[in-house]
Image (tube, rainbow, N blue to C red):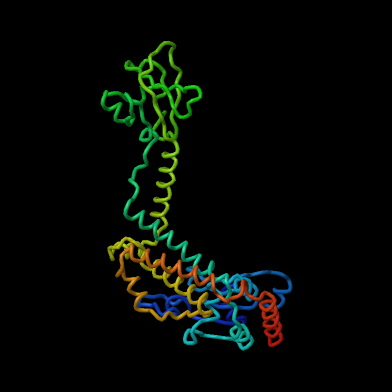
Length: 354
């Protein structure tokens, strides 16, 4: 079923403009996002042919089936709660039977995790983005050779430096394991290149060092240590960085570079908004979708603050949320029985009218 089909069949319960236009943080370039709630056709519902939600291809229009909406509401999901608290000028349709839902209060202590918890994850995301922009990985991945060190007198030096100093090649090296010494190997060198040594690594694509068969009596030149943990971490960081490059929203990334602060300004604007909303819910017991500090939020989006200033503000808000949570009078969870009762009531009345 498509969004057009559920509307044509008269299955819509509620529809509203969501996102920046509901928050009051929209700009002339902002898209119009829609959210809504619908009811499955009666035969489909009783036949247990579930359809939890219908979305547009770009996910800027999302419609929840009534049962799915009730489930999200019980979890104090921000999207579900914001639908009920949508400013009246953003409500485009409301079926009479759905008014019962809009009159109820479902806020609970769960909002700490659903609003502030999500914001906290966005702070981590912002820090990760800041790191990627300011300390990008080199375009070429390092090899195990870059993480090998050899003993020199009472210290150590990078293997590649040690080889370069002698004019030697890694492919003529031979390594042998040392009993009871993890990650430490005896290193031998075949200057003539006549021995079947495997080298420190077998090839450019190797992810580990190689061992060789060493002729009896051949002298040990030095001892080699391969920092495998550091190499593995480098590979993870490299892969994560290039995955991010491949998947990032290029328009938002260019905006990040343009304001010169090296953070995703839109992401941090929503992070601050979520933390402020969570604080109001826990402290005052209200959900204000339309934000009273529009200008300040838009300044954040425009890059008017430094990354450090916004991180400090986020930390302060998270501390305030914790304090408010400790003294809030909100219930532990929403009233599950009441949500179930309303869901059944709305469905019965809707089908009766159909």
